[in-house]
Image (cartoon, rainbow, N blue to C red; front, side, top):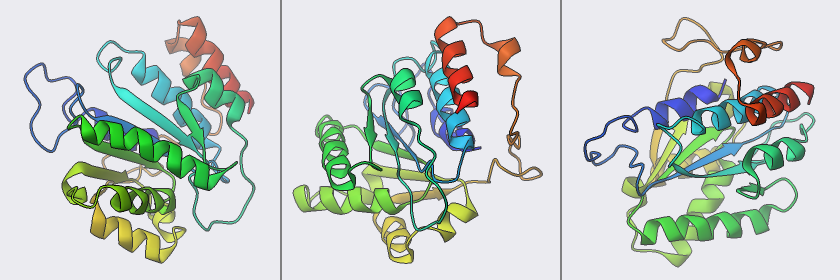
Length: 223
């Protein structure tokens, strides 16, 4: 599950009370941009619920984040409509790239530029493909040609399949123009990850007591 990607980003330094080191997530300045493809991937809905659960913890509650739906590549299959879940989970702090791609790029670009202007880095957790990331970087490069993107924009990808269904040109561009990290796939076991993959995940019912989180998890499963 793509939540492994998100946790790998957040867990790098977020629990360290000392000043954060260069190249690690800075909870005071950096932006977490979580991009979901939601195209054939029903596990993305679990990931939305898991992300909100993480962010509800006092350790991570001050993190600046933004979510994107519909950040998919060239894969075939149906789009899993996540809008009710995103609205419940994130309020207005998300962007719909499926409905209007160009408008979504422009909206997220402005959020990124604000973070960069405040000396923060961008951490993109790709719960999907790199096509939207590539469009974002190209758009920002046009506005901010002097930014060192390989030092300021960090991309974390967890899936071989995601890479295969990204436009090859887009994947190559992102790898060359960002700080690109490929981590073990949490959809599989035996690679150092917990291997989170269960179509009927129900353990949340025993672990979650917050009514809002319960509602989010239930909607994620219903969808």
